[in-house]
Image (tube, rainbow over all chains, first blue to last red; front, top):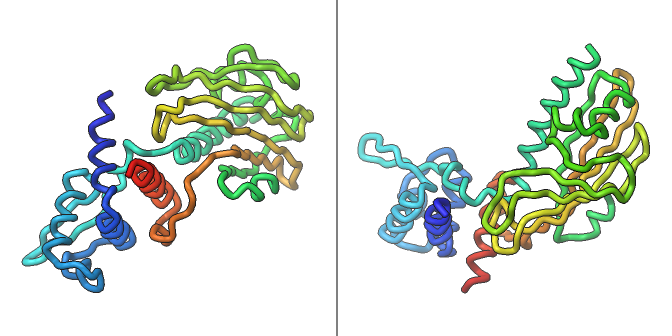
Length: 109
Length: 154
C-alpha cells in the first residue's frame, strides 16, 4: 500500500501525451534546458515549464541551476515503482548467473 | 525460440554465457534442489521429471502471495531443461502482475567449457509506441506500459 502513492504520482505525471513527450526528450539527452525543450515543440515555454514542474514533483526529473540557466535531466529511479516483470527478471537472471558462476567455481575449481 | 518470434506480443529474456565447466557439472546445478537453492532459489517439491509440479517462494505483491508455480516440461540430460513459470495476479501492475512464462536452459559444449543459454519467454508487453523509440530498452518498455495503462483508463 505504501507504494500506491508514488505509482499514482508517476502515472499522473506521464498521463499527458505532451508531458510524456517532454519526458522522453529529456531522457534522450544528458541534460537539457527549457529553451532547448521548447524549440520545435509547438508549445510555449510556459507550458513546458509547467510540465517540468509536474515531472519534478513525480521524481522523474531533476534540475541543476548553472548561472542563468537551469539544466534538466531524467532520473531513472523515478520509474522504480513501475519497474515491470521483464526488467525485474532481466536483472534477476543476470544476478543468478553470477551466483551460478561462483557456485561452479566452488564445486569444480 | 522461433515460436516466440511468431507471437508479436510476447518477448523473451535471454542470458547467454560460457562457463569453464562440463555440461554434466552445470546440469547438476540446474536440476538438483539443494544446488538450485544455492544459486537460484530453493524449490519446493522439485524433481527433474517431466510433468512434475514445484514452486518457488518470492516476494508477495497485492493479492498475490509470491508463489511461482512451475511444471517441468522437458528434461534432456546435459542438453536441455525447461519448466513453466507462472504467478502474479491480475490486480497488480508491474512487479506481481500476471505472469505465464517458460524458462528454458540450453547447454552446449564449447572449446573451453559449456555455453549456457537461459531463455525466459512469454512476457506479454503492450504494443510498441513509436513515440518512445530511441530510448534505452528498459526505459522504453516501462514508459510504454504506463502509456498503455493510462490510455486504457481514459
